[in-house]
Amino acid sequence: MIRVFIIGDSTSARKEEHKRPESGWGEHIESLSNQEFQVFNYAKNGESTQSFINKGLFDTVLNQLSQDDYLFIQFGHNDQKIHDKNRYTHPYKTYQENITYFYQEASKKGAKVLLLSSISRRDFKNHKRINKKTLGDYPKSIKILSNRLNIPFIDMFKKTVKLYEYLGFELSKELFLHLKPGIHKNYMDGVSDNTHLNEFGAKIIAQIVLNEIKRKQLLNQTMDPIKSYRMIDIKRLVYVQKRSGRLHI
Image: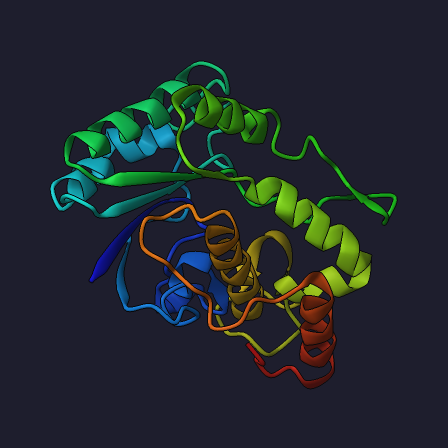
């Protein structure tokens, strides 16, 4: 049995009921794969690499890691928060130092690490192109670190920028918490959140993660998605989702 541990922020976290319909991609990779594996999702809303260490959250994960387990690491959104001393990290200093610490400690346990850059925010400029600086230098920084330490890496920032631009300004809303008034009791009417995913969006992102793992052969064991979607397939799914409001993935 493959065991996968996920550490990160809200974009990958499993949600408590009061946060629904918000969802994280880490909730769905198990159900969207043909392989038998078990996911332990320790990603948590609001966490950065620094707060994840300081709160003892990484220690909890580390105590459970064993030989041949996998550790997926994706941070960045909250590391950006420069006015919050408990969460902010410098992209080329403390951010890289913290991720290196995660990697080294996991490796001591015999676990294998996969790094992922943060998914992009839906931050359009002039309704056409995603703002490539919406997450500062964190996506670039983790890519540099992965090359330096020779750690398997998926550039989810690049993949999601490409996805949102391909879908376009309006259709890309279907992936996020753009909520109609009077429907969702956990949120204010008319929420337009371009950072947090809804369930449909989280499943799409999870599908991309699985596609990339298979395409780049990043894990020793095969982790096959149930179906490998092309960009055009995803666009068709989003059109169906927009028309019906029902999950079709």
